Amino acid sequence: MRTTTTTTAIVTTLLLASLVGCGTEDGTTTPGTTAPSPGVTESAKQRFLVGALSADFEGWTDYAPIETDLAHFPLEWCKGLKAGRSVKYLFDEKEGKLYPSGKDWNTIKPDAHKLLLIAVDTHCPELRNQVTTELVESGEL
Image 1 (cartoon, rainbow, N blue to C red):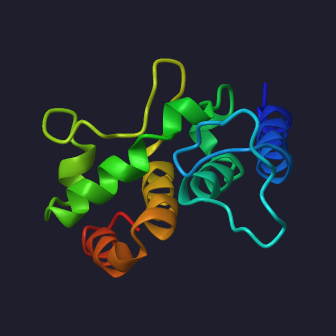
Image 2 (image 1 turned 120 degrees about the vertical axis):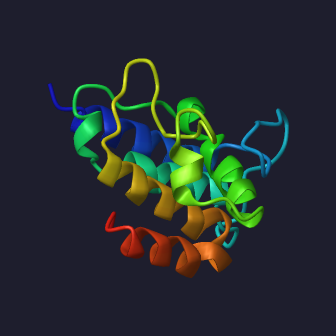
């Protein structure tokens, strides 16, 4: 079963929530506050989640992660990259332990790299060249 319908529903919900709902930079809601004005841009977290959940990754065909499964990865990846860690280190199951996978979803390596690039674009764009260069030089991109 393809999760395109589920993914579309999730993305639509996220977009509507950002237009209608109230929230803070970290994604938590604050009851009683007013909705953001139309000129307010989405947070990095919102942009990442919309990009990730609309990417239609092959490994997420049967089950796509929910936003809480994904939300912590960008900050951790950017933190590691800023500390001089490589993508290989971050994704290593014994070292960085930050490969984007969950108990029910399977992210194939090319999709993991694309997801990382979405995160870098939204959370630490100054590191885009570093990550892209590493992926190209290692033959991963």
